[in-house]
Image (cartoon, rainbow, N blue to C red; front, side, top):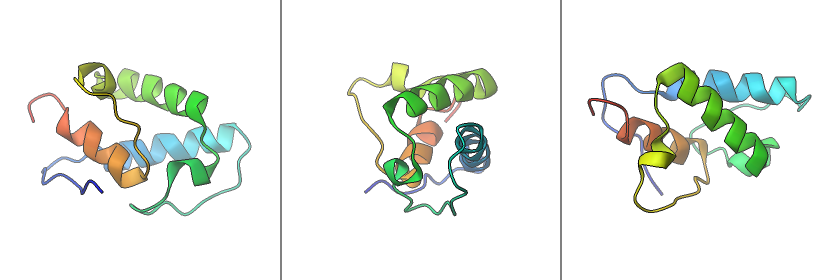
Length: 91
């Protein structure tokens, strides 16, 4: 499992807020998000993940998945945040 990157400015609050907003828009029941939350258990499917990544690209200014040399599908919220933190501009 990936672990949170040691970064002064984590993307975690933005990722968490946008994920919760997307789930609410899709009429999904409220979930408590922890680092170990499995993304698929939230009701987020592959299309939802694509929408989330697109919104985060607009908000953060980058898409880490387009920067990766090896495709990865994050399993947990923590995995997802680590990817964003790892590929953040200036990291």
